[in-house]
Length: 141
Image (cartoon, rainbow, N blue to C red; front, side):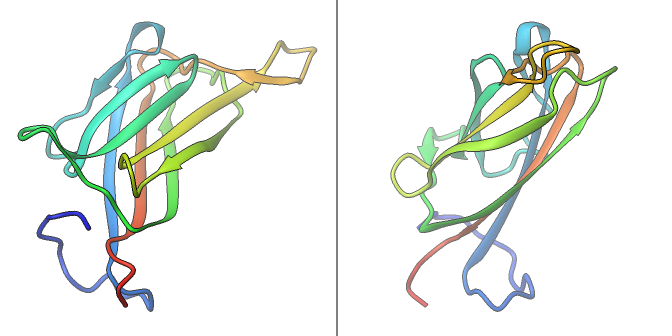
């Protein structure tokens, strides 16, 4: 269970639901430029693993702690584009909420304009990526 002070009453039937909001701006070659601590409360780090692949770790970067959650419930990703997008879709490629407090998102795009096979795709430099992740803080309900 994450040790944080959360606001009450999300108006959901499920108990102990936590939603964290975050984001970053894509730098050169997919680099992560965090939007700011206030916009990323509860987000310890966002790391680029490879082409269009990012891992979000939940926790507190100030005291180097990781927040582990009982259950992953969902994620939304909203790219605010800079130019024509290089990607067509994204998938949640991994969740490890209980052990390492992480999720991994992968972006895909077509090989070329004539070949529509999807491959890992880099986000355009300057694209802002906003996300919200919903989890259950405890299974003791």
